[in-house]
Length: 116
Ligand SMILES: Cc1ncccc1N[C@@H](C)c1ccc2c(c1)OCCO2
Image (cartoon, rainbow, N blue to C red):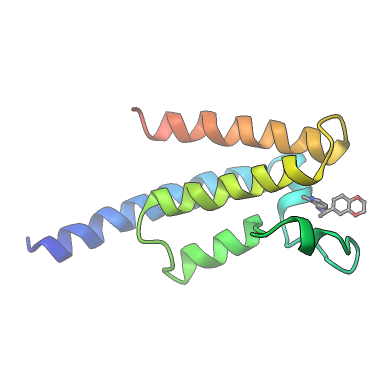
């Protein structure tokens, strides 16, 4: 089949895998800090400190709107969530701890689905 068709099929498979991992993270007990965009009225300094806000609902929207051109763009946004969390939250805070465990979960699951 033509290159473009092959590419579309590859991307569809990649996005199906991204949806699977995203759904697993959303279902996790410690996902609650990351489900929606941080409310900048509740955290007025957030906008100033965090230059690229990201959350699981935004990633879901981007998958469904066809924004991602590869699984690597998906993983880049996922890692922004966890890096933002480390920037803004103390490691020993509830949100900080949730960020570390969700990052560990994501990276392990991602490796399972993407053997290197
Ligand atoms: C991921 C993140 N980073 C920095 C600040 C906030 C958040 N998450 C929000 C949902 C959040 C996290 C913790 C909360 C909260 C809201 O509202 C008040 C109680 O504690």
